[in-house]
Length: 478
Image (cartoon, rainbow, N blue to C red):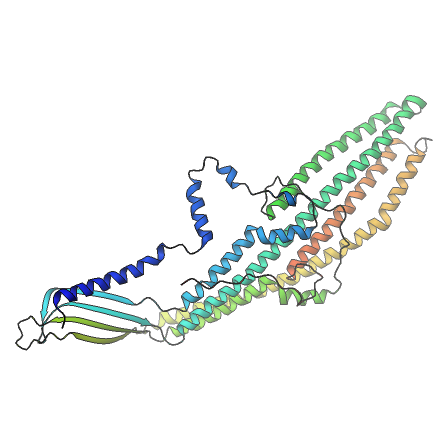
């Protein structure tokens, strides 16, 4: 038997230890990035120049012409959308051990306001500890539900990477088109100025044309200057759009190569259908969602079975008391309690809710699959038609337009062609040059979108050879 003072000291020490053990952990910050975020937010309130801190960095090594692969590699490491998806995956992975874990045990201390007199002695304090034990399979099923959320997050990370790659490519090829349009326009401006020289000589020296011809060419030169101003504005916008996907300052002078390698067009649309259904990350995420909801249905059915709570109580008994046979032996009690799942309406509604959600997820998968097939068909048709038009421009339309302009320039000095026809032929050739570059950019943009739909970085990569990089999930800190 322990003296009353020793018992009180032990009980107080035990309670204080358990309280401190339970309250210590939440104060620790385990994620260094969260520490940086917390510090940055606290400092932002007192930052005298918050705009400077908010501007994305600029990397000098990315300035100037680069192949699209360089920008893709950089975006996969720096794009905030990808980083957010990666952290959501890590967050989901940390929910699995939580779902598989028992709830915290319960500990309680009861001090009797009025001591209880028993035959064994006087009772003043009792200590209780209990642990809830879910029915067999509940914890494992909860962990399975959380694991499927991890799989969905993993697929969403891959989808985010492919989406960013598509945006980088589309932005790159749009920037390529604007750069080429500026180059072509400036080159054709020189040709127009040559025409202006010919017209001016015929007017001032030969006196074979009137001043209207000179003014007509000068107006066309001024019009071309206006188009160049608009194109340079589009250049700034295209550079800022691409820099955004790289998480760079919009002032970063990103540029494209002057010439692009030949685009490879896929020919087997049936193979594209199969690749899209087998590899598109959004479909994998939808399948993981279906499986998650199926496991949630199993978990709802397990609610028909009771959970068990096992407990133990120790009652401090002292020899002091009014009983003549008081011996001061402490009391130990073991107990078990169960919940009674008797409200069938609630339980059945929970099962129906989970099953309905699973069916809805399956229908959502079917809808996404149909949309995927439509996208493959649409983008394949776009790429095919753009390739045919591009070939038509390069092999037929542009050569004939160049020949027409050359003949017009030669015929104008002898009066066989008037100035309106000459300028119109020049303007038409300029439009064909720009349309050819626009088609080239649009073709590559269509291929970029098609690659994303089939779940690949490149549309011509054979299935099974490409694996999207997924970072390993670190085990949770204990």
